[in-house]
Image: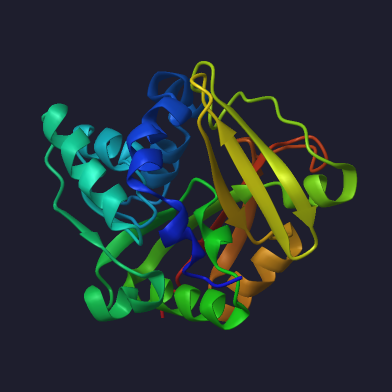
Length: 251
């Protein structure tokens, strides 16, 4: 699999249905202000939402007064983010299509207080060199003391015990189902089924938690800690999603 596979999988039709999959109200309720709490804890004002999707986090955070730059590797997603921001009368500082490996070529070094890579997006990268290069670029565009938050599915649970989901936090849209149809050590393929019978697929690299943390550590992030389904104390075999927070050293 290639790290660019997702660009072909996010078709215009799928992107136009993405908000139905997410279910904005249900997702906001599930997160319960978790990311706002993190940003405030680290005194973050400027935010780069680099896996913006259709703009769920970018729009909500901008509406709450954060200075938000939205970016995504899929152009159709960025256009949908702009559309959603306009419809909700929210102003983003910027919104553009950016490959994570090129982040530090598009944005200046030391630009952001915080960087969000959410929605299981980092698992679109299949090449380890691409993962390392992307984390290096993320570190570069963060200000000293800034934080990166990367979340991903609990692939340890999927690989070791099979798939089940509470559908409580992500992909909570009414009538939409998301589940893996292929589970392998080096690839998990998810199928997204809609009530009208349409099905779409995304192919992911299953990141184990210890591997993700070691990648961030080796990239230079410090003060690493994880949350499970937005809780500091969690059962690693029971949660659906993991959020990993790392900080750029001040010196």
